[in-house]
Image: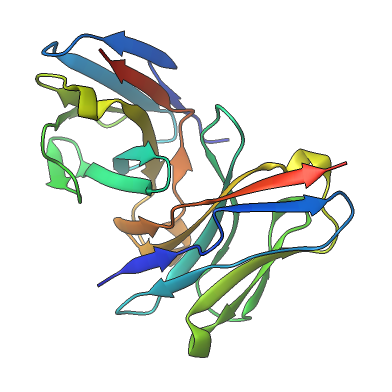
Length: 115
Length: 111
C-alpha cells in the first residue's frame, strides 16, 4: 500500500516564525502536492512537484514556498507565518503516466495553528 | 473556469436509509472524476473514480457513482448507510497534475 506520511499531526507556531512541513511517500511517485483545507472551501492547491527540484505554483502559492531535493520528500515552507495561514495542510502523491495513474494518495494532514 | 460544486454542506440520514450526495462540475476537457472520504482527523481516502467507459462506477464500502455528461454531474450513492459512513465527502475533477475539489458534504448518520 502507498503510504504518505507527514511529520506532524498538530503544530503551533507564532506569527513571524519560519515553519517547515514535511511529507514523505514510500512508493516512488513522481508527483507530489501540497493542499490547504479550510471549512467551506474544500482543498486548494498550494504547490505541486512533478520531479526532483521541479515545482509549479498552484492556486494559492502566496506566502509559501516548497522544496523537493529527493524524490520521496516534499517540504512546504512558510517563510514568515501569519495567523491567516492557520489551517489543515494535506500532502498527496501520485504516479506519472497516463490516466490510470491519476489517483492521488493523501497523508493524514498537519493541523497548523499560528498564534 | 474549472470548478466543482457540492450543493449540500450537511446531510443527515438514518442508518439503513439510502444516500445520494450531489456533485456538479465545470471542466473544459474530458473530466476525470473522483469521490474521496475524510473521517475526522484523517486524510482523504479514495472511494471511486471515473475515467472512461461505463458511466456507473462501483467503489469501496458499497458506494457507487454515476457520471452524467449532459448534466455535468457525478453523484455518489449508497443503498443502505451504516453509522461508520459518517464523515466528510469530497468530489474532485481533474487530470494529471491539476485537480479541483468541491467544498465537501458532511454526512451525519442517525441511529
